[in-house]
Image 1 (tube, rainbow, N blue to C red):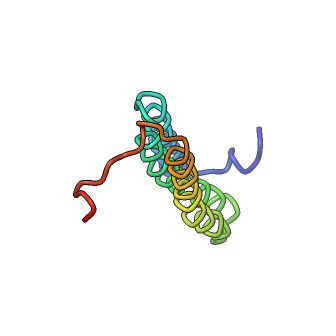
Image 2 (cartoon, helix red, strand yellow):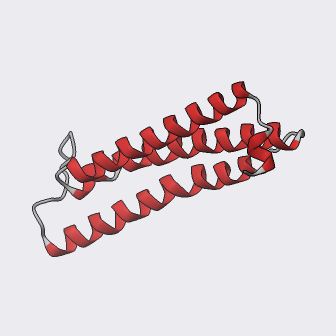
Length: 119
């Protein structure tokens, strides 16, 4: 067995397991929303929160594991979280804009309407 895992206290194992399971559950919920929703415009909302929150809790579990196992504070996972929180919403926004442009150009009926009509 890996010496890092063998020397980990029980409270740290339980905390890491809980954080990783919460992260995996949130990612699963986002994936189910991606499959179950009907249109592309509805589908882009579910993975955004699932990916972001799921990644943050998984990264928190990784930070706890390596901080306790190595006996020093490990914070480089925060950089990964920063990149995920910056790139995921921007990527989905660009995908929606590209789809909206494509649907308007093609004259598709799937283009979402505004709540108020334009004057």
